Length: 269
Length: 307
Image 1: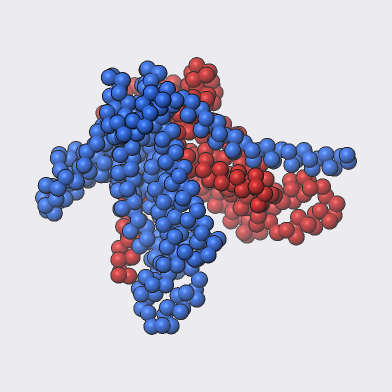
Image 2 (image 1 turned 90 degrees about the vertical axis):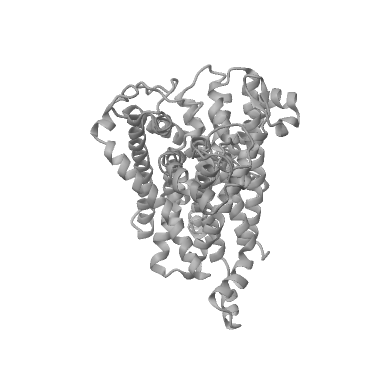
């Protein structure tokens, strides 16, 4: 019976290796400098790039962070501070509920709330949908990190005559900062590849656009439409896009790891 | 009031209002989706859930095929992923040498970082051809299961089976992360006692470790179910998108999430939009119940007593 667990371990690691292998083989073939600098070519034509989608994804992540980080960190501070107060228990439970909300449901909500009333698809609506998905992730890690700060540190600050809010901001938050930054980066990496919330909000755009009030291109959306198109030139663009998307996710995750390492090495503050 | 107290009050108000954003956001989501779904729900009533005809041009909106597809594809995913997750978690928690734990654990956790759309892309160009050629003929002819309703009919690759397999890969890291955690939470004394009574390693795991961790493992499985139910992009790209209920796993199907993803931007009539919103509301409701159940089960093991 124990031998079966070895089989399970092999089978469970196989999909990732296969996916990475295909990504590297198919993606590397169609990736070049022009992929990052040029616009998409018309369907069926060779070459071209996805510069608009890469920039679009970065803009969407910026908008999402502008909403998700302050709300998530604030809520995390509140939860760590109030612990078992009835409101804190409720917020903690509902944050879990929000975390389990299907991304497509977040998409139709953002459409109903931000696209329909304003009469058009927009980067802003897409960013808000992604930001809302970030909130529970950031809230949870912030609370966990702040709880790790030794109570003695907080008590020492209060005993020295610091006010509560200055203790929270300059002592507690500062001590927990590397952990919170890591949590924030992990959250950004998680939403960077989200497609479903963008389908009816950011919509995608064949042209160059950085306006928040216009539809905007995004890597995941572009990969989706290339993948289901019948042209083989589009397919190779989809693979290249997927490789770049994975690289972005990976780079953000690696930075997150580096920030935590600094904390444990005692180098950061 | 002293200036310092005023600062404290302001800070309290600030973080409390951020915290209140979460219930507020959830309430707005629930209310606005329910309002948008109301015309379709009030017209069809409970029949919305049981009517199996989804025909846009005829104005028929029955969500049963999509609900069926969501439940079947998720169940299939659990069926495939659970033994695998359980096996690899036992391997990592009890058997593997130390140097192997980190790389294997990391590889599985990394599966959770891959975007859904990339799974879909990989599925279209690798999984579908694989199912079409060695897998489907193997099941039909070599195993002789082609005559059973479960594997009857032609197989074009895009099918309930493809959706189930990709979902299984996608939820594997979630189930295995929770399972590993609850296995690690089993006290060492539990293991030592079993071994002292003369149990072999496998008997120790089967009789002392697994029963102790049982409700936490079930919680992890249900958490994976919650993920599978709401998964959109990869399923939309692989399931074939046909609103029909078929017993065969080789037949194309539809899920609630993929139905919304496919039709929402093309919905022209108000009733069509409202029906899609209603599908969203049903999906929201189901995942809510499933997730709450999972959290409760995991919480019982990691914080509470033994099951």
